[in-house]
Length: 250
Image (cartoon, rainbow, N blue to C red; front, side, top):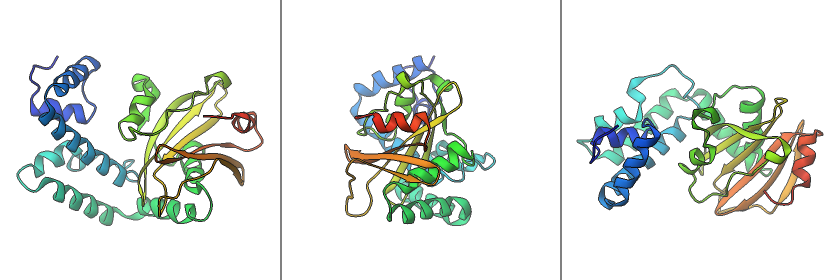
């Protein structure tokens, strides 16, 4: 159990989701009555989100303590923190390059041609091929909606597919040229998978009418709301795909 008021180390642990449920609630209660500290914590959370999104393609690399968000924050405290975090992200992205850069570039460029192409590619990379590991698993604490809310506070709620036998299993942060995106993978007892994908709209605030399209062996149902674009992706010509087509609202 942490002490009150929480130390700076406790606050960093809160930002990095390293506190127990009881300690997390204590910190949140403290932040509610200390707006100045709450503003600082929100700034740290935004920096952490920026780092995670920029590094989404390289998080599967061996752990490097130098890239830990908490370590970066402590190292940069005595300097102009926000400017140097941005510089660190840029340096890491340029030096690592490779798969992460290809992922963001490929998803954005192809996504400009047909609706939510990046959602279909994310499904292939994560749900089908398992190339990108999950950032979060439902078994961690069972609160997939809470995980998504850390990064997309205004987005639509996760669709409830429990009647069709599908439950959220894992989540993954991704990056696009418009900002961070995320994909939540649903699974049923038979191992079939459906994904929920959320991303910022494209250039010129391009929002999508509700629609559906197929791409090879996959089907995507897409729409927009609350300032974001969404897609539900599943293998085509399956009961899961039929269920998505018949669902009027997510």
